[in-house]
Amino acid sequence: MPEGPLVRTEDLRVYFPVRKLFRTVGYVRAVDGVSLSIGRNETVALVGESGSGKTTFGRALLGLVRPTSGRILFDGTDIASMSEKELKRVRRRMGIVFQDPYASLNPTFTVYRIVEEPLVVNRIGTKEERREMVMRALEEVKLNPPEFFASKYPHMLSGGQRQRVAIARAIITRPEFVVADEPVSMLDASIRVEILLLFREIQRRHGVSFLYITHDLATAKYFSDRIAIMYAGKVVEEGPTRAVLSEPLHPYTQALIEAIPDPDPMNRFKMREVVPGQPPSLLNPPSGCRFHPRCPYFMKGKCDVQEPPLYDLGGGRKVACYLLEDRAAGS
Image (cartoon, rainbow, N blue to C red; front, side, top):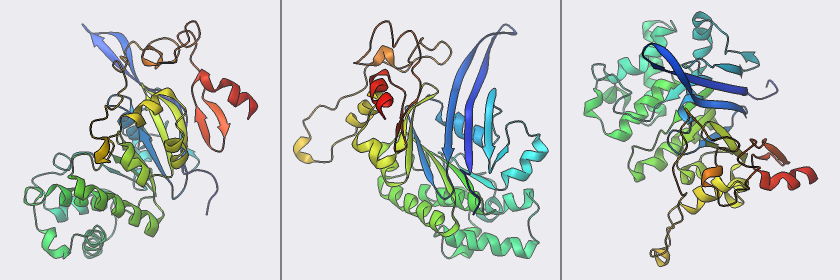
């Protein structure tokens, strides 16, 4: 097996211009200097509030959004500067599962045509070979018998079944890397576990690497090896999932975990702590640490002046917070 991570970004930035009366008046800094790696056969969860830049980051990794600067290395090759023709050859090694199983499937296509489409686009196999591959993919996502589902249209399926069709479409070309963008957020709670277990089974069988984008720390706990917490376009904490959730170090991570509902009925009257304030505008982010206007440990003259680096604490733990400055120096 080749060495090194399958996917790695280096100081990745994705800015979107804001235009007014035919002139650019500023830039939305959706992703602003993110360096992150995803190993082979590894799942990294990217967690954060809505509007933090998670989806933009995931799409940039697939070449669906062009970066403003920085590098995106896929299996050691920088894809950020590739032409569309070159990207097309690389994309067959990638897949994506979108959040909304209702909007991500063409309502005029049968399930068979939806799942077959990546094979047709990439000119893979003969008609007979493609049929066999489609049936095998439907079986793999537990849509049995596949012949029964192949002739159906999306409106004839439940939300969980539609998402299974989307997963079959994503894995039909046998990708090495899949971006799963909030894949269970629109499904019933009873179906979510089934879909996450299906992802695990696919990973175990084919060695797929996943970027699992979510705002739900509970599902990230069960379907990720490492976790990266994103806030206002930046990663503020990173590390092994169990370590981050058992000992959150960044104030934002601590606040997210405090906001998780407690399943203990004896604590039903306990008030959950929520992060005060609102996420900042990515058009005009605050100076210094972007979390400082909402941080209970804000140090005036420091946090609001200079952006903290992502301190390496050892053991795979990284935190962008001045509270960890002394700990990082001693590690």
